[in-house]
Every structure is written in structure tokens, then in C-alpha cells.
Image 1 (cartoon, rainbow, N blue to C red):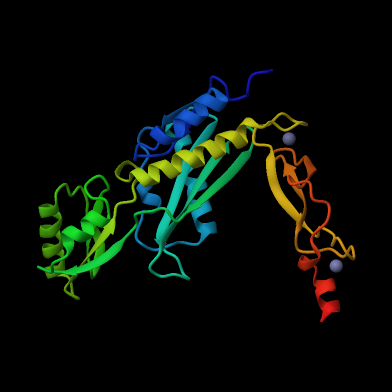
Image 2 (tube, rainbow, N blue to C red; image 1 turned 90 degrees about the horizontal axis):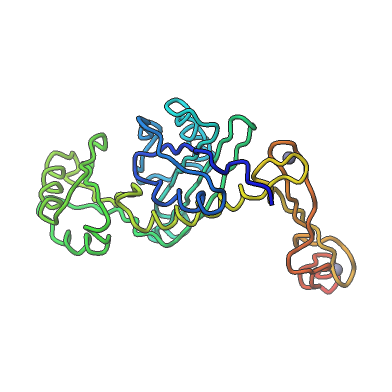
Length: 287
Ligand SMILES: [Zn+2]
Ligand SMILES: [Zn+2]
């Protein structure tokens, strides 16, 4: 077996939150590449966790830009960045969820890859408290504090979140201070989602890094570029009864982002037809 093109290379990682702890191991194991945190990048300028959930395509753009920041301070061909978004999901306002995006850029080959992972396993919380209001210690316990970090933000001025709070007493006095200076008399207590202050997020990043490294370990059969894999699914698996196309997936398409080579792959479960219950034509006839 020939060596992977990235074996023995360095890959830059734009992070100031120790994400290399989660990302480096799979890249070392699967590709033989060393993931190194890029020095002097200020990824916070591209946006931070605010409790709002940005559009997924905006997240992808930010994430690619962030990865490319590593090229400014490191002499490498490849770079990685990750971007996460956490908050209440639309349908169920009180159930927090999150999505993590990881971008990989190989500027020499012109390769850009995105992998994503969504999760409902998050400790993300946002709560409001007035000065002197009880219930803060209980809220902090539910948020996993102090193992998990928290921010306190003034209700009417989100420009100066208070970070680095280490004890329940410090959080309470920050809440009192910010609630008093807020126009609505409230302070916001919110989970710190920065990777180094959030073990659950670090775990998700680790899983996502494995997914990305695995994808990169697959080489294009035509040009040898890393990252050959699933790019599309074609629907239209024929009905077992009448042969009309259904909404079931007919076959998968694997492709190369560098040379455009693509191959169709049959369904993993071996099905060649869809059940009659999935067929619109058959259902219409029965009625
Ligand atoms: Zn190719
Ligand atoms: Zn049918």
C-alpha cells in the first residue's frame, strides 16, 4: 500500500480554544499527518457564540474563511477549522440542540471539504435572572458548572460578556452587577460553548474529526486526491409492484472534489426495488 499524500505533513488548525486535543488524534492515526494549532490567529473576529443560530450556509462560509486564516501564519498546504452553532431548535423551543461544521482546505490541490454533525446532546442553556433572584446555584448545577463554563451578559448590552467565572459566588455577583446596569433589570446566564470550556462539545468535535479524517483517507481512483466519497444520492428506486420510480434512494454517487470523477454505488442494503407502500402510483390506484 502506498503512503497517503498527507503522511508526514503538517496541517494548520485555526483555533484559540485547544481544539487540537480533539482533532489531532484521528489525523495522526488515519493519515499520519500532524495537526498543529496555527499561532496568532484571532478566530473570534469571525463570530462567537451568542445564543443565536445562524444559517447553515453562513456557518460553512465562516468556517472556510477561518481555515484559511491558518495560511497567514503557517507555511502549510492544508488547514482545518470548525464552527459550531447551539441554541433552541425551532420546532421545540425548549430543547437545545447544536450543529458542528468542520472545514478542510488543501490550497495546493484546490480541495475544500465540509463535514457536519448535529446533536441533541448538549448542555446549552440560556436563562435570565434579576439582581438577587434565587435559583442561580440550581441553574449552574444543571449547566454542569464549574466543569462546564458559563458567561454572564447584561440584558440590554451584549457587547461585554463576563467570562472566566470560577465559583458560584462569582457568577451570582456578576449576575447582580449586570442585572443592575441593564435597562430591563435582567442578566443573561448562558453556557460557554468554547471547546476548552465544554467537554460535551469537545467530544462532538472528536467524532466529527474522525469523520473528516476518514473521508480524507479515501483517495480518488482517477487522480489520487484525498477525500473521495459520497457527494449525492439519486432518488427513484422502482416500485416492487408497478416499477414506477419512488422517493426512495435508487443509488449513491461518490465523487472527487478535485477532478470531478464520479461513480454510482448501489444501495448499501442491496435493495433493488421499493415497497409498494412507498409508491405514489400504487397508492393512488388503491383509493
Ligand atoms: Zn480525482
Ligand atoms: Zn407502484
